[in-house]
Length: 100
Image (cartoon, rainbow, N blue to C red; front, side, top):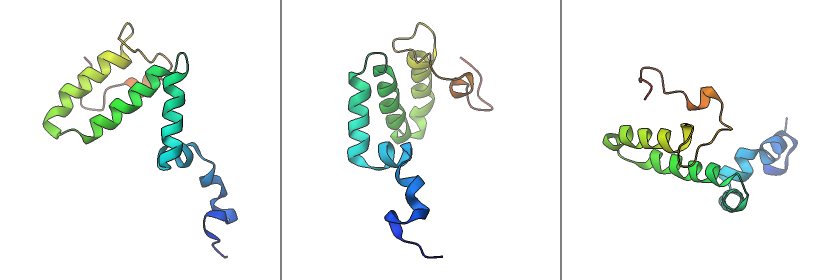
């Protein structure tokens, strides 16, 4: 088989995926994040995305406190920017970590 690159049939699904358009492509990511910020009810999702990216960049020693702050702000009913649309699996503490 011939691999035609980004325009070949084998990559078409990847080119139209959410990950490709809104995460891996800088302009697509920026536009999607701006959309989240401006859409009623979706601003918390945009804020969560930004905070998760900040969490990934923080030092190992800061991660426990950062995770606790994230849970309180986004995962806890009544939190400042509760993301009630997330599944129970998405907000569950990692294995081996006690719930708050």
